Image: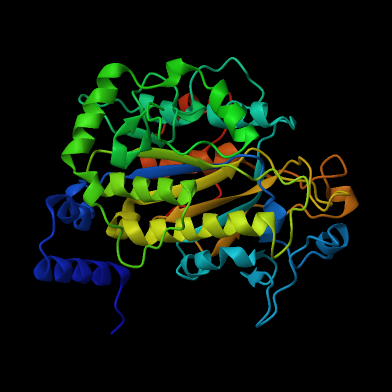
Length: 417
């Protein structure tokens, strides 16, 4: 008889408790799905810098892709060689994302290609702001769409960790009236950028973004200190990821490990956010090896480890990734790519109807390119996020979450069951 994921995880947990003196924090982590009350969890990841969606999820069935990228294209799938990992005969994963293929095969990972913002800006700062505010082209929006997701679902006694960001400052996406907490390091109980030992942001672009976030976006003092007390009570230094959850070294892997830790500690987390920078590859982007391959390896390994780590909580968890815009369809003269338009989004989780690439593929022939240079957007990013908000979080007030966006459930991609 086949052993299901749920049976395997529960039996493994029971064996661990039976044979080991498990600290109280680890016991809660092992049985996280039972103590969390069945509430849904929504995790959002931002790939800052404009990731190259065409080399992340490769249209290997599109001949124009290879003619436009003579030195950086990912080779068509070939057995025993570094090449695209075939998904459906037309699309394939970059080989550095091999850790995600089992999730695809298990139908817990879905992809939305040619997705993005309808706004035409090629400015990192404006595009990120629009995707975090959820109002493309409108700079006057004061709060973020992820905060508004919770605003229209008020709780009488909200948990201090209801909304949490892993980072040194609260991001634009969580700005708003619902209290949210930014944590730079769970182990040191550092909140809102107050930890002088926190890992510095690695490059100039991400540093400039962090400095541009206004200090008023931090959680208020009362919520912050209440959250710190709750976190200390869980004794987070004793946390160990689940067996097989091998997070790579680096800021992003550590952020997802800590996200899993918070979800499993039964602290009332409903939405969580983290980001990963370093996607702005104008020069020497690389193909199966190089800058993009390196960051994709960290990205894929971290997501796969997170999936294993959260165990049964995956049944009530949806994770979505996004980036401000894609890259040009053609490589540039420096064997890199410049700022483009459409990109690719991932959706992962128990409720996700995975094993499928969603969205309408616009094509890469000259007449199909946006402004003659970019992959065209055929799925508005708010449609993907809106489906998660509506069907997973259960918030039916999409006009509040994404003001000005006329949409209905009938237009959702169909990612979620």
